[in-house]
Amino acid sequence: MKTKSTLIMIVLFGLLFTSCSKEEEEKVEEVKIDLVNTEFPEAEQEVKETFVAIAQSIKDGDIDKLISYHAYSPKFTEFKNGEPRNGAEANEIHERNVFGSVTEVVEFNADDLKVAVYGEVANLTFHSDFQLKFGEDLVVVNDQITLLFVNTSDGWKMVHEHHSPLNQEK
Image 1 (cartoon, rainbow, N blue to C red):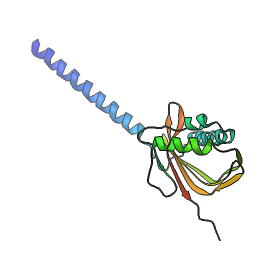
Image 2 (cartoon, rainbow, N blue to C red):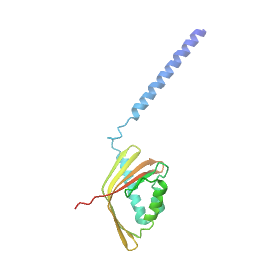
Image 3 (cartoon, rainbow, N blue to C red):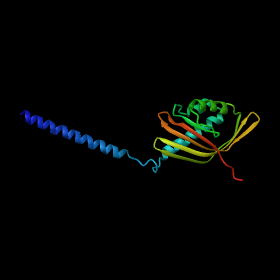
Image 4 (cartoon, one colour):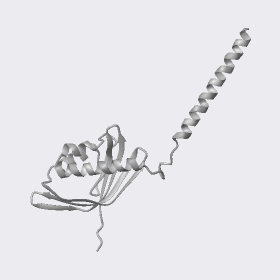
């Protein structure tokens, strides 16, 4: 009797482990997505809407709102003005100093805008045509800009910014 019970238990455990293994394999197969070629139109629209909100926060002079679109952490990076990479603290100080000093947004155009979504990560690239007034001084910013976003529980947040001068056609 003991031998029969032991044999039944071994068979049951074997079936249990085999069925769990097959279920795990099926789950893994379901998750595999071609992140490079798959389109994510809803997420793309969300990223575009986030960018529009970022632009509006700048136009409104709402610096705290602008800052809220950043996911500052030790992973945050920024490149600008050909200088070495900086991090979250330097970026926030720069954003507050620059955009907090804007007295008027004359133009805020993002030409050749492109959003590429890779699941929970997206990059947004464009050529800036920003005309910002600082008192009586007009500053024109024509850069190539890349913003890297991650989809968080609070929506799409920037985790990297890259600004490079845009060569003007002669």
